[in-house]
Image (cartoon, rainbow, N blue to C red; front, side, top):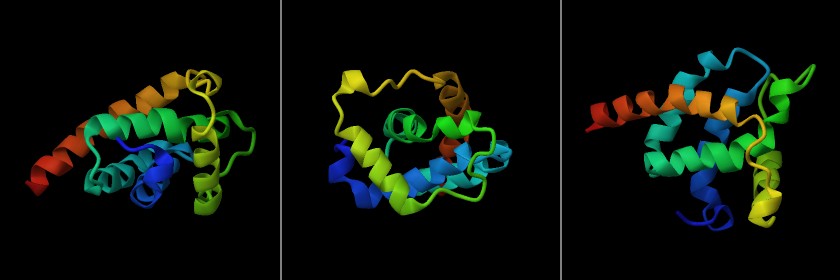
Length: 122
């Protein structure tokens, strides 16, 4: 998979789709839409999982524990800048493990839906 900075145009739709899972709302309602958009992307399942766990989750995880978090959607421009800025850090400074259980849970909800959607599309 290309680095995020070299693949921004294709990745932005996936970043936006996955960002819905981090709103201060019931994320389970957003899984269907996020899975549909992810399935329509050209990324493999492994690449989608990596995008969620290593790009979107680390930038948005703080919204999961915020007292009054973002509930109406993340600004696409802000999200792009935040993900790209973080991707330029050395890997050992990224601290991907914080609240990782929540990201893994979201992936377990997404993955089977993505598989079903792709199978149905043929």
